[in-house]
Structure formats: C-alpha cells, structure tokens
Image (cartoon, rainbow, N blue to C red; front, side, top):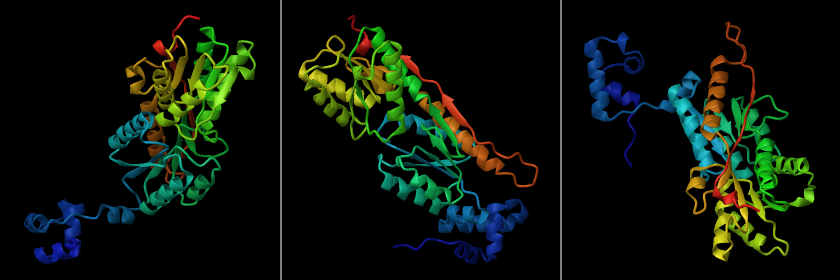
Length: 345
C-alpha cells in the first residue's frame, strides 16, 4: 500500500524547512515568490494533501458539524439534513450525517465518533428515551442542539414542531368529517413525538365531546412503510373497524394505504387516512395523502444556525462577546388536506 505524503516530504523535495512549507500553505503572503513557487511545485508533484483533521486539532475548531437523525430512509429527515447543510455551507462548514436507525446503542456509538472527531457541534434527534446518551455526550463539552424534540429539563437549544397541536389538527379534521371511531397508528411509544401526537388527538376528541375510547391505538416498533402495512393488516382484522386512521408519520400512512389497497378496501370511502410530515411522496401516492406538514427544511436550518451562534459566541469568554442564550424554538404545523380523507359521511 502506498504511503501518504507528509509535510516533511514536501520540505525535503523543495529544499526548505517544514515551517516554510507550513507558511506557504497557511500564510502564503509571508513567503518569497520564488520559494513559494518551489514549494507549490513540490506539493503538486508529490500529490501532497494537508491533514485537515490535524489542522483542526491544532486550531481547536473543527469545520464539521455532526447531524444524527432517527432514520435517513425517511424523507422528513432528508429535508432536515438539507436545511442544516444549507446553513452550514453558508458558514463555511460541512455536515457529517449519521443515522441511528432508532437504536439507542447505535446513537451512543455515533455520539462517541463525533466526540473523537471533535466536531464543531451536533444536531441531534434522540433515539434513547432514557436520556443517558445525551448525559454521557454532554461531558465532552461539545455544543449540541436537539432537532424535532423540545429540550425539556435541559439547558440546550432545541428546534421542534408543536406535535400536540399537529395531532389535534389531524383528528379534528377527521371528527369534522363525521368520524367517531379513529385508529392511531402510533409507532414506538418511547418516542416523544409519538406521545405528543397522541395527546393532541385525544384533545381533539375531547373538544368534540368524545372520550379516549374513540381512539384505538395500534403501536408499531418502527416508523416505516413495512410497519404501516403490518398495522394495516391488524386494522383489517378488527371486528369493529374504525372508519378513519391517523398515522404518526407519512411512511406509516403509506403502508396502511398499501394494505387497504391489497385488501380491496377503498380509501377514503371505506377508510379515511391522515399522515404526518407531508413528505414529497404524500402528494404522489395512489390516493393523495392528507398530512400534517412539518417545516422540515426550516427546522434543520434553524437548528444549524442556533448551533453556529453558540459555537461562535461561546459561553462568555471575558473578551466582550455576548453569552449565548439557549432557546427553544417551537414551529407550528399545518394540515394539508388531500383526497385520502375527503369522503362524505
């Protein structure tokens, strides 16, 4: 295997000191033109690439921001990443995107990797409901911002959507359409988002004078299409089947839609469906999907901006910089009505 070319090799080839090569790379205006040209020629001839990670370690500031999400197979998180990457790029930074796959152990491994790489900061959608991973990561002193999660009981910044309001929007729409028995395909119960959307759904039922028994919860282990198809099969097996279903995200809703189509159940005439997130595929489904829209790109961009603000200002360094104030930004969801929930009852 070929050895990598180091700065000493360049210095030897150019007949100069290592310090001169460093100056050509970092402060070229301090080096005489003829010497600079000789060093640059050696760099080109040897194929030298400077170690950015080593430079960052010496400077104590990385140009990489970490982003750890629950599922990069979910277009919602792809949009979050797009927003974060846009804000980071404008600040001259890159983004290292990692996927916890909704697994607390994988999340812990990636957080350790971020700490080893000494990233500038981390944008995190937690998978670990216990908070242990966050507590362990906090000891490294690396700033982080919670994304799609309210920072309750912590001092960190967060950017989220009001999921209680979102759940209420979805179920209020179904109640207004005449539905009195609604299923909630909820996803893993340990996720805060899942619980908050259920709370919103129950609030909407209470507003209409309906009790919690009007909501039949069908939990799933994951938030993907396959889990939605499984929930759809369970829904079909209910003796007293609800007339509508609210799903904790659009991937679950698309899976339920597939299960209904395979069983010959007509959507929305036999079953109305409402999803959550309003991913691009929602509007393109065989039956366009009503969904609660989250501003995912905006969420990612705002989270990155908060993280950049914190890392730029610091926590009061005695040199006149303003101390960073941690903030909880809560965005509002929006109901987008399409054909999957529009049957008259």
